[in-house]
Image (cartoon, rainbow, N blue to C red; front, side, top):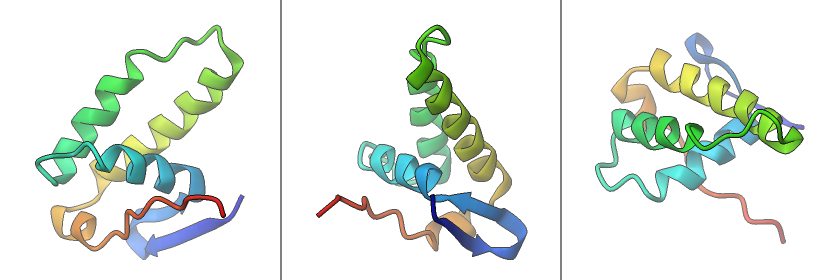
Length: 87
C-alpha cells in the first residue's frame, strides 16, 4: 500500500495506519492526541490473535499507537485525519 511521510521526525505512517487513526478519530470527542491513543488502545483489547485478520489489524494498531505516542500535540493537530472512503 501507499505510504505517507507526514513529518521527518515521525517516520513513515502507512496508509492503513493513517486510515485507522482517521476512523477512530471520528469517536475522539476530546479531539486530542491522548484521546485518540486511549480510544485505539481500548479497541485493541478486543483483538483476537487467533483470527488472521486480527493479527494484521494488531500490527497496524501497534504502529499507529507508536506514531501517536512519539508525536507532539502540535504534530497531531497538523495531521489530516480524513477517512478515505473508496469511490
